[in-house]
Amino acid sequence: MRKNRYTLAVLVDNESGVLSQVSRLFSRKGYNIESLAVGTTDTPTVSRITIEVMAEDDARARLLCNQLRKLFPVHSVKLLDSSHSIRRELVLIKVKAGTTEARSEIIQIANIFRGSVIDVAPTSLTIAVIGEEAKTDAIETLLEKHGILELVRTGVVALERGAYTIDDDTKEKGEFNYGKVAFS
Image 1 (cartoon, rainbow, N blue to C red):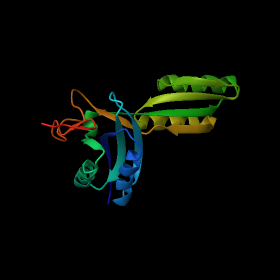
Image 2: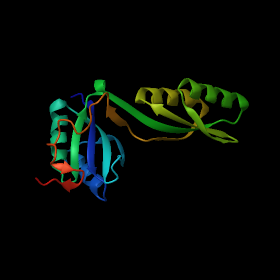
Image 3: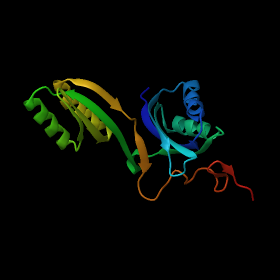
């Protein structure tokens, strides 16, 4: 059966052990996390996790979201629609550049992809590129002929376009106030 890629945005308490709880849920259910990016939000006590996972269909992806919502440190979970989302990853690529010709060609390739040369050494250049996976895959392919010494990807981060946020259509308003239970 062909699997599809799904992007989940998850708001969680920013405390030790939470990422482990979230990743264990995927492991227990037999899903491999394809991409994972975590960072604090504008509220220091809350972190946002962007997870990409392969699932058989929309129903299975929604089931994963529902199971995530049951975890105590989880505030919100949203399955992001790829047609209404902005998805980006950062890639750092260290490339061999021993000659002037090689350096010029690598810099031209970086410029075409709106990448930045962030480090220059006598025999290498390090390029930073931000974009969708197709863009980062394409620059990687072009730079391979020069010899990639090292490459690192951050994992995809994603936000919905427009005014929609992760808090829309999730837990009832007031149920959580970013880590504090709301009392009426």
